Image 1 (cartoon, rainbow, N blue to C red):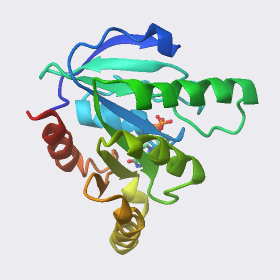
Image 2: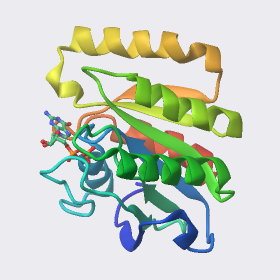
Image 3: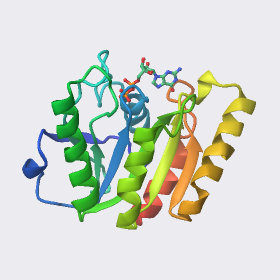
Amino acid sequence: PLFRNATFEISIARSDALPPPHGAEVAFAGRSNAGKSSAINTLAGHTRLAYVSKTPGRTQLINFFRLNCGAALVDLPGYGYAQVPEKIRRHWAALLEDYLTRRESLVGLVLMMDARHPLTPLDRAMIGWFVPTGKPIHVMLTKSDKLSRNEANKTLFAVRRDLQELGERVSVQLFSSLAKTGVEECEAVVAGWLGV
Ligand code: GDP
């Protein structure tokens, strides 16, 4: 289990404070409230590793967690929270873009989207920044327990079809922290990126 027993390492607020790369990194991103903290906790088998905030958009930090295999899980600030002043929003966008496009130790992006409203304009912007790096993107359609099996599968195929022009480097899965479904699929994809 790739993410089990992940340990918190450091939080940073600015891209010029990034720690020197040490091991491969896998980034986790998503709109605030997409279920990213819950997903990280579920993957790690930990109830409170990533703080599940009650105020969406408050996590403005990049959090580094160290995995047993030596790689890092990098939890990026949630984006798209409307109540954030424009200046701060721009700062986050710059931080995200900087990290995603310039970090050489980054091997791939796991992008969380609420399965009930995937591929918002900001999600597409994240994909647009990342695709030119040539690194893989794995989309997790979260909270899939909130949809019927039929609706969830329809969404899965619609998102796959939408992204298929981006090629083999983009994969899509359903995930639920509540039902604990999709853990192995995510582990397998990220383990493939890391070669572990
Ligand atoms: P973040 O802002 O992306 O880190 O999202 P959180 O992990 O804090 O989750 C946002 C809200 O969605 C919280 O109220 C969670 O309890 C809820 N949530 C997260 N994952 C799931 C899930 O798999 N199923 C359901 N039903 N709710 C979820």
